[in-house]
Image (cartoon, rainbow, N blue to C red; front, side, top):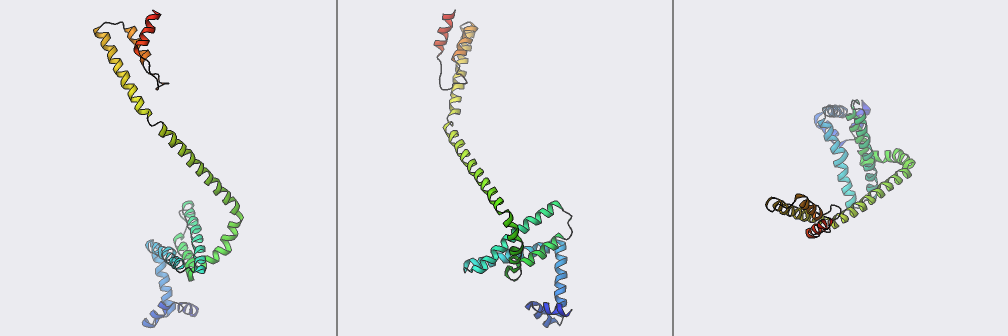
Length: 236
């Protein structure tokens, strides 16, 4: 118990609370740990602790490091965010593969508190002892994979640009198609009137309609009804 009291006295707020209440600092520390465990188990407290210790406080310290150009602090928190990113991926993988993993929330809070303690010294230790040796083994493979992905993305962008350029060139095609449909409709009505009121043979008018209709393979040219009818008469 004496060692716990000595450790608790290192925290100024616990020491001041012990002096005001007369409760030994070790008991205050144990009480806070028990309260934290209860809150973590309920879920809400654990989320708050993760947001404050793992993101809010390091983000503020990173802001100060950038503002005052503190290179040592920038290096520490750069390592912290690298370790935290890998830790988040590991946490999500464990949660997805083993949803019933016991005490995952408590372990996560303890790990984040270790990483962020004393201005990210815990994260620096993990980065130098675990992350660097591990990534050195797969660095070349990761770089080649990223280069291949970037090349595929750039090629996809070029293909998409070419497709858009070709689409712009053909954007007037629907208007031409509508005009051809209107012409065919007018010719059909004229042919129908000729059949009903002038008793022109149906086969002759059908041949004219067939010859005067625009070819689906060639929407850029048209053929006149008179030429089609003349050809039909010559054949007869």
